[in-house]
Image 1: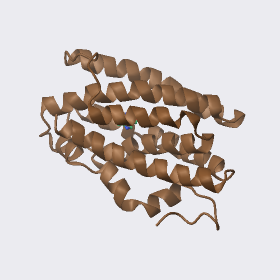
Image 2 (image 1 turned 135 degrees about the vertical axis):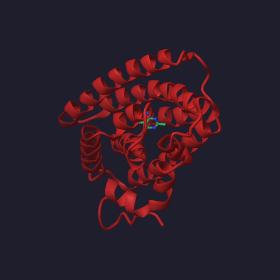
Image 3 (image 1 turned 90 degrees about the vertical axis):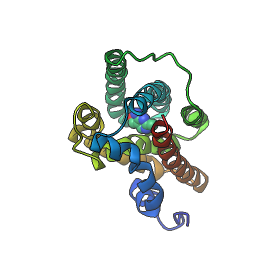
Image 4 (image 1 turned 120 degrees about the vertical axis):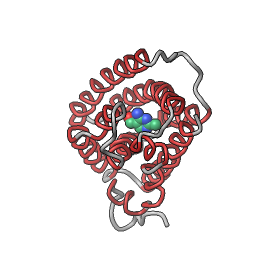
Length: 213
Ligand code: HMH
């Protein structure tokens, strides 16, 4: 059932309690379970690594559009996120080099669909973009955290998105998304809700894509 919008504004917390099942599927997956068990194959892990790099390239452009649409008081947080993405892209390049992986490969279908969805948010109100941005970061924060501790070499990956600083960053993103959602009409609220569900579905599909190698 959709979140009732007439009584109170949509919030990030409400989305999580309304769509627990979809969120569970976005953040609990055999791919992550097998990283935790140490039984994921290099082929599976490397597929994830390369495709996620391609994802983060497009996510960086989504972050830029979010910044362009943001109110003044939200810029500081989002610029911090942008600095983290600069570091993350270089880190992905280093991890790929260690494994002799070619990053100039085509996007797989699920990665392509996810990138298309991120691009399609360009014309949406800031509140919708902010909700999607929070959901995307939360998916990795919770997905990696829920499968910690991981054995080497996966612990480095789990820590990147599961560490307390990143958790705090995701909380701040929720606060900013909530404040934007409090100021929009029903149509934008409905769009934010539908984008949240889309993100949940694509996160599940992305793990599945990597799992299939
Ligand atoms: C697929 N979702 C996916 N990749 C990521 N790196 C994140 C979320 C978080 O940044």
